[in-house]
Amino acid sequence: MGLAPFTPAHADPAPVERMEITARPIENFHIGRDEKLFGPLEFVGGLEMTSSARDFGALSAFRFTSPGKDFVGVADTGFWFFGSIARDVEGRPSGIDNFRMVQMADETGKPIVKKWLVDAEGLDVKDGVATVGFERNHRIAQFRLDPDNMQAPVRQLDFLVPKNELRQNRGFETVTRAHPHGQHAGGLVVVSEKSLDKAGNIFAAIIEGPNRGVFTVKRSGDFDITDGAFLPDGDLLLLERSYRLADGVKMRLRRISGESIARGQVADGPVLLTADMGFQIDNMEGLDVWQRADGATMVSIISDDNHSILQRNLYLEFVLHPD
Image (cartoon, rainbow, N blue to C red; front, side, top):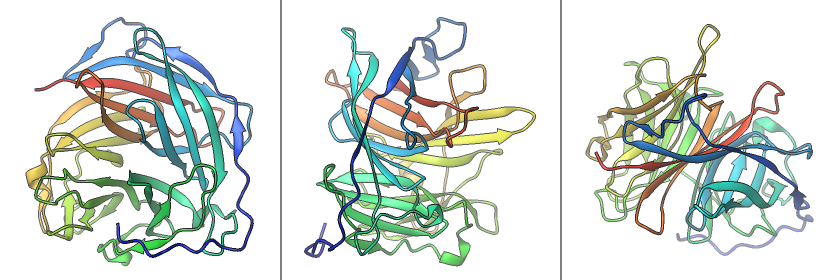
């Protein structure tokens, strides 16, 4: 990664808060129906998660550090979170183990309490380094990943998109790595939620690798981008969300052609799944793609409850079948 040697700050680190999570299994994605197949996606199972801990919630992005089990994530209230997915004998998600949260620290090592400074929305993890996208105070920062002792950022990355083009609460929601053997050689790719160019397309950038540069993603309908991850074949799977008072919340998965992700280009691709309030969804914010032991490509999605009694923290899991 080329990170400079890290010198620990003198401030005491924020305490790690361990939490008991109550998880109610979700057996059917389509409420009141037993169907499992939704286009190329097969619903495996899900969880509705609650906790009496004050800080639990606002889960905005996550990545598995071991396939389908251990995970790390960021909350848009300025917290790291860690835990593990428990599974039943059939391999379906059944609970959350060893869950804990810890506040993010500033460059001096002190916990940050002002939300606008730590509105964490996107996350990538590789080789013990967590790369986080923040909006409002727009930046892409890297941290050494140590669940028991998370410290200050060690590096800030150039995100290439002109800062004046990033809307205050519509910044980088997607931070992910391209296919290691593709045209971008595993470089970081960032996509904003709804920072639009003059043509109405969504600003994005390849910020590492041999083909660095700004591109855009075609905006389709009234959906905004909330996360994304690259698939094994090099395409980019985007999680999108729509909210209108008359219709409520909707969720969508869109597959963006990897070949269309290039400097100066407008990337686009087909919709794989759209779900409304007739399905087990909420404010779906975080997505990861991983490989199951049998080789299946898995898609996991979480929701952000905004610490509202009207919203839920959900975990959903699908198999993505070949076209």
